[in-house]
Image 1 (tube, rainbow, N blue to C red):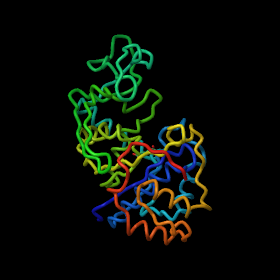
Image 2 (image 1 turned 180 degrees about the vertical axis):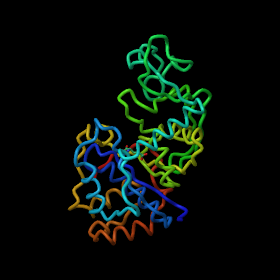
Image 3 (image 1 turned 45 degrees about the vertical axis):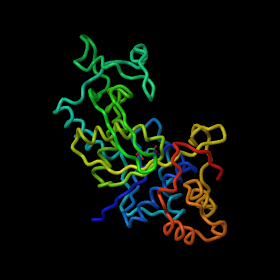
Image 4 (image 1 turned 90 degrees about the horizontal axis):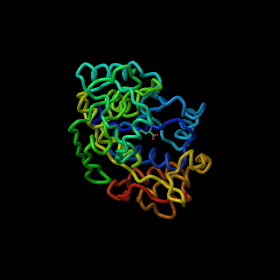
Length: 298
Ligand code: GLU
């Protein structure tokens, strides 16, 4: 057993773009430079958002860039039994409850937190008469979570006030990302999570669930997210271009520069394996900019 196990966990909503490449490169370099394992998990639970063929395309791109996982790929769509068992465990310990509220009812409460409306705990003490369960939520009463991110520094959330009782099983019968990620990270023995800072505000929720489920908490490092010239995160919605594997060398150097690693100019013209060699010898997490987002110019 290695003492470091990292992962890259893309959602197959489109091909790899520069932003997701940065997350793959950061997690890969951190794992390899610790002589650790590196795994890939395809987060394809949110069926309406999954794009057919995108998972294979992402895997082909990772291979073309020279990033090969150490174990076979895990697909979240094959793991619903494990998520069901975790939800059941939380039901037995009475940490979750059925909720009948619709989005508009929640919006009517007008309470906002760091990610939209805070659920006003309407169904915490039981479903109102005549209403049917739509979703399952976790009770966050008194949940204050603190952690130290290796890049972004200390973070503290009052989960109840800033987020509210969040959903673990959605009204469209899909297990929520927050639950699935905790179950999978534990099952795969992930010790270090290196990912984009767009997920920094999800981390306290995940730590809270780990505590409720008696699962270990990995170390976290959140990389700045790549944005376009308008300051929007590169994504399918903002029409980010897919990475071109024929330019893997150039794009890898750009990703290293984005991650503050200061690659020498001559590396730009080097073959891919030489770029990786330099990157592995020089990877320093302390050089990654301590920002949640930054403009990318690959
Ligand atoms: N699947 C998530 C995404 O692509 C990442 C999840 C994670 O790294 O925890 O945004």
